[in-house]
Image 1 (cartoon, helix red, strand yellow):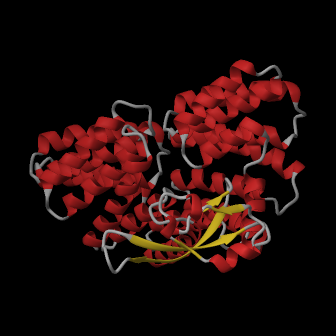
Image 2: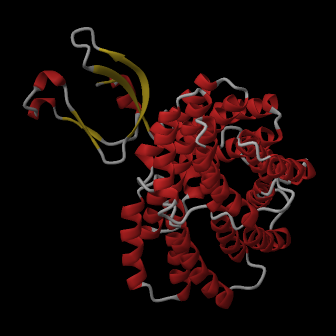
Length: 440
């Protein structure tokens, strides 16, 4: 590691030259104060040893305008004081176990309703990110009940509570409940916040997401446009939330079959993320997953597999081994292997997915998708009895959870008709063809 000494002399960061006290005086060691920040410059392998890397660092401090801007932004996004602020930071960087331990300790010592409401809310956020949705709802509801007692009906904090409960129900595939809570949140925010506030953009984005999941794509795009309009005005051009807005457009366009528009939105999102986050950050997982879906739709299976595997590499490191998002990724990889004709690999990945989806509380519609993928695999293997078993499992969930005109129902009806045609049960095949046609 090399440090530019010319920068040290002009910095206001305390340091001490300790080379004469060091066991290795030739290294010219310098002792810096805690929380010293360096800008990373060139990184290269040393000529003498290819296993060693040389990193050039330039010291910086509060006088650096970029560092000052970053610090101000972090202060805005991670508010609070003392241990509460530390807990927020732990959640932000994904240290969930440490955060849970901290918040449980704070809850035991809490003496005011406002503190308890905040801690329950943070524990709900934590459980949501761990994929433990039922526990998340329980903590969020405890926070909401306290807030309804101590806050006015149009307080923005109440909107946040409604919004987060809606998000959990959306993750669980309970879209009517999600929409109910999201709309309560939006109603408060439209009354209490200025028209370009980022929280309003969040509400529009979330409602758009529910309509997207419900298959009402034109409504989804309407709300996504409202979100993007505010986000562009309210946030810097490299803010992660702007990347999130583009990802939502990509997801919607992919389902509508507009793959050119989907890829354009994905490139916009990825461009922002590459400027903002280090390689391998968890935010890239969703982007890579959507790239994989689009390329799968375009029948570019090697590209699709590459992106799904990039996604898997990230989520296996970042998430618990039973997290629902891991199951989605396994299922996507399995489906690409099916499309490439490697049925053994396809079934192996689907088995991994179902091992999670059948044993933890997750969005049942994601489990239905895996059942459908397994059914398609067995159908192509001409094992029609097993295929029908999995199709029926997937169909049961989708008919219970989706509106009768949802496009995903048309997909499963179409697949059922192919199965019955293959087994020469033509009346059943025509029944499902008719149901698919009625949806359109």
